Every structure is written in structure tokens, then in C-alpha cells.
Length: 276
Image (spheres, rainbow, N blue to C red):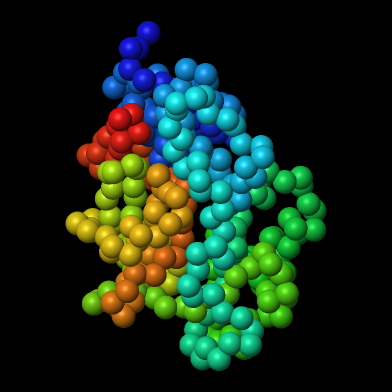
């Protein structure tokens, strides 16, 4: 048995799915000799406990209790709904005259909550109809956020539902005319930044045409991270008129590859900050 510390991961399923970044990090820690325990609760022998519940809002009353003396990673990050941090949100009565983007208030298009809920035939039918007309379906297109010319173009049913959030659309545009979104991946005192380029206003890995790594991230993001209580996660942001604007805060980030890249290996070293 390893004489290195035990890392306990509270996850909502018996095993970590391979698309989570924490799956890749756990493999690295396991190879380095750490003991890894995954389950809904924390093992009593845990030295570090990682809260890894892929839900937008967490109820502190039902969260697992860490053993005495163990450090908890992300134990304070209970609400990552976009309304909790958005600085771009607008209302129907605002005088903003530029383009807007319609999003789900829930993280990751609301997919984790939808998977966990009981099957709803009406919602399922709406999602299928949204492939043809999201306006008629009263449901956003699958894995997409519509960009509209103005507030006046936003359907009334969007304003009426707390499920949706309307924001000013302030994209970052590269010198060659591509849309850009920057990312900051961090664990403890280790982190790295990057910028993704796409021809689509919705900049995601599946719309990406190229990417680059960044040497630094803006100081205001570090301030936001402390204010929000993040120990581990990923921030998506844009640089607009000289300021960083947070678009998305995720405490259960995913990765496109679990290969032990130099950056993932570096990120894994962040666990040591919680063992001091």
C-alpha cells in the first residue's frame, strides 16, 4: 500500500468519467503513488478531499463531510450559475443597442441537470423541434447559444423564464478576423492559459480552427477566483477594450485528451498546495 497521502474525490457516479480533467489528473497522481478514492462520500483516511459534483448549484446540506484535518478542494464553490458572476447581463428594459447572446443560466447548457432529471416527453420534443426552429420550440439549439442583433429580437418567452440569461455580445476578434475565447485552467498554485480561435461566434473545441498557449492571465481573474472560492477549475473569458470579462466558470472541467501532456503534469503538481 502506498505511504503517500490519500486523495478522496466526491463524485456523483461510482467512477470518474474519462472526459473529466480530474480523471486525467487522478491517473497521474495514482502513478505517482497517491491513493485515490472515488465515491459519493469521503473516505475517513483522506488527506485531501475534492468536491467534484457536476451540477450548477449544490446544496450544502447534502454534501459529504470531510474527515477532521483534511483539506477540501472547491468546498466553497456552491453556485456557478451565470447570474452569479455575469457582468454582461441585460434586461428587456435596458437601453443596450448592440447584439446580444442568449444562454442557459445553468452551466454547460444545462446538460448535467437534464441528464439527472426524469425523462420529460415535452422537453424532449422541444429539443428535437429546436433543430429546425429554436424560436418555435421555445428551447435553445443543442449545444449552442444564439447571437441576435438586438434586445428587441429576443423572444418574450426567453425573458419570462429564469432558465435563460441574455447578455451583451462583446466578442474578442483576432487580427485576422476570427472570434476568440481565452481560458485559464488552474489547480492550487499551478495554472496555464490559452486562447482558442473560431469562425463561429460560439467558440468551443468543436468550432475551433486553431489555438495558442498564453504566458499570463489578467490579475482581475485571480481576484475573481479568490472571491468565488475556486481551488480548481477553468475560467473562460475575453479581452475587450483592455479588460478581462469572465464568460464561464467551471469547477468540473473536461479535456479533449487525457494524454499526460506537460501542462497536465504541471497542473497535477497543484495537489501539493493542499498537503502542506
